[in-house]
Every structure is written in structure tokens, then in C-alpha cells.
Length: 236
Picture 1 (cartoon, rainbow, N blue to C red):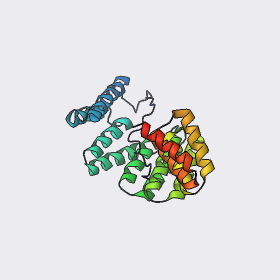
Picture 2 (cartoon, rainbow, N blue to C red):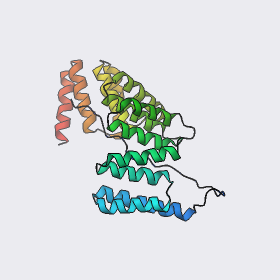
Picture 3 (spheres, one colour):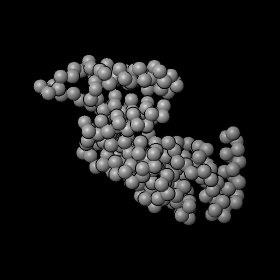
Picture 4 (cartoon, one colour):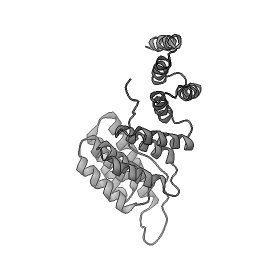
């Protein structure tokens, strides 16, 4: 069975406040204009219109050159078009300017993992997790788990998935990947309960059925294996 290693989140949004101080001359409209351009740029990126995506994301950075979401969005664009050096340069600028921003740390960790720099990626995910007032801890634990799977560290991945679910018990990727690891470890009852809970929350899905087929096959329950196989076939 193919590993349920789903794609890592590419961009994490967050709330930002702009304080009116003598050292900060940015206006609320600058931030709002940057946000509007980010929205447009990401929309164009999803549509595959790279020219318009870049134009809007660069405009976002012009409106607010130190805004971390503008920096991350343009870095993501550079990744999408294969300009890895430009992406990393922008990530490092964001890190210098926002060294304690959990979103920046998490996204740089994602970038590092994509490029198989696993040890560094793990460090940045954990830095994000340890930041005060960072509320996307479950996402960073899940990213760390997926990255550990990619690097072949299954036990470490299992621990991270457990931590992700401690913070958010219904993360679907963590539930499915943890169930898969439990099946591989022969923990069939735990995996079965986890998958049944998944179905209660999200309904029957192809990936969860595939896991149940694998589980019951390995557990020797041929009747259940056939039952789930038929169900999967009916789903098309």
C-alpha cells in the first residue's frame, strides 16, 4: 500500500496587529493593500497564472516590505516555479526580521523538508512549536511527523502524530497516517478504533477504506477484508 504521506501545508495564515509607534510608519491601509494583493496572487497561483501571481505578490511586498505573509507568499511562488535560491533568500529575510514568528519558522521547516534537509527542518518545526502565542502547534507537529516519515524515522513520526492529535484530535492526515503506522506495528485494535472514529467524523473515505482492507487482511479477517473491498469498489 502506498504511504499516505500527504503534502505539507505551503502557507500558514495568521492574525497580525500593527502598532502605531514612532518606529513603525506603516499605515493600516498598507497592510490591507498587501493582504488584498496576497489574496489575488495566491488565487492566480492556484489557477496557474504565474505572471499575474508574481505581479500581485511582488506588489504585496512593495506595499509592506516587512510583512511576513507577503514574504512567505512570494517565497511560495518562487518554490512553485523552481526558483529555489530566491525562495530561500526570502525565507531567510523573513527569519531575520521575524525570528520568533511561528508561521515563518514552520514554513521554512516545510521548505527544508522538501529539499531533504530533514534535521534542520525538524529543528525549525520545533522552534515554531515552542514559540509563545503560536496557535498552529498541531499543524507544526503534523508537518514534523510527515517530514519524519519522509526521512524514514517512523517511530519519531508516530510520536509527532500523537502530539498533533493531542492538540487537535480530529486532524484527518494525522489520524490516517497514525492508523497506518499502527497497522504496520500490528496494533490492529488501536488502528481499527482510530479508523472508526475517523468515519464518524468525516464519513467513509477511500484512504480510510484502503487502510481497513489492509488492516483486516493482516489481522486474518477475510470476510471483513472482502466487505471493505466491495465498498471501495462501489465508490468507484
